Image (cartoon, rainbow, N blue to C red; front, side, top):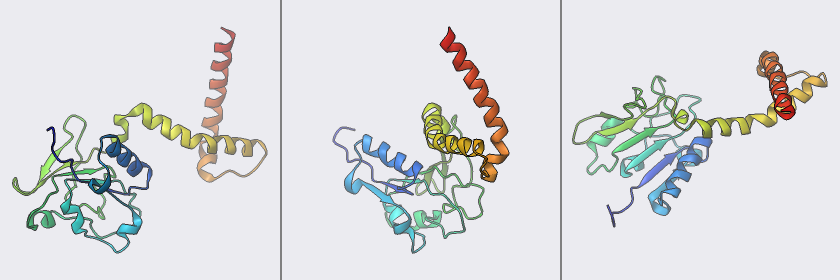
Length: 195
């Protein structure tokens, strides 16, 4: 509504690829300053749970979970808080089946057709978004971002392979497919140039 205060949003993992994208989206929507909390490893180093999460309207989790960690927030924290503000959790990380999920109540996957589900009591619960492949919502952007990140490695590895260097095992396992598709792309490009 016009004149309404903006939501207060916390992005966990704000310095990573997904987190920086979430921050950019918030900023593009005019959510900045004290209304946008950008947390990353420095803010979470002491381990959770974190009461600050209950004091925002929207919590966006974008961490890469590589080892067991304490929960960031629990449903009990939300339901027992005197005045919880949190109403939406968007779990971009989507560790719903991981036993070390830092958002233990985000334990089911939602879909593009039904992106939210409510957990907890009607009065004190939260809506969660746990779409397992959220980047595919923006396939062109996700593909371009991934391609841009991978291309320099692929070019370097192809040059190294041609020079006889030993390749990283991941690349060596798929090098044949890359060479095959690269040759097909070269043929297609040559055909387009001739036309």
